[in-house]
Image 1 (cartoon, one colour):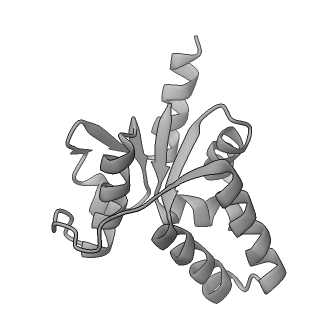
Image 2: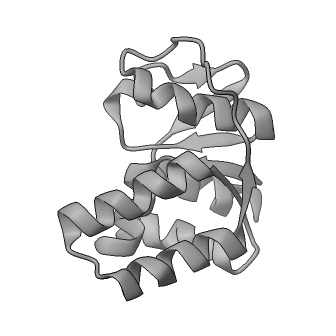
Image 3: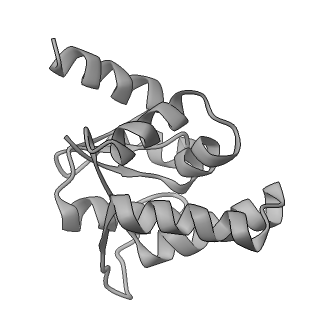
Length: 136
């Protein structure tokens, strides 16, 4: 299974835990293939630093984990407007380029789309249900 994790999922995984952290663990363990981009990595470290007070050592560790366990894809500079929040169009572009099975997000602006091309946009709870179902 190949997924793109929206920044809000990764922020939750690193700063809070819970279901997003379980998904991150599956990526780190190689059971799920995670895909990201330079822009999403930058957004992740910025939010963790500004909103959650991660110091440079913690941010370096986060970046190292993401870079060593996720596939990093390049996206074009000009993206079509699809989401009602244009910043979310980058997540859609990553999913399209990488041909992911799912986009995992907690962002209502993405979840309301439900599906981009043939890629379902689902919550962390839903992706965990898919993983459990697919393994049975």
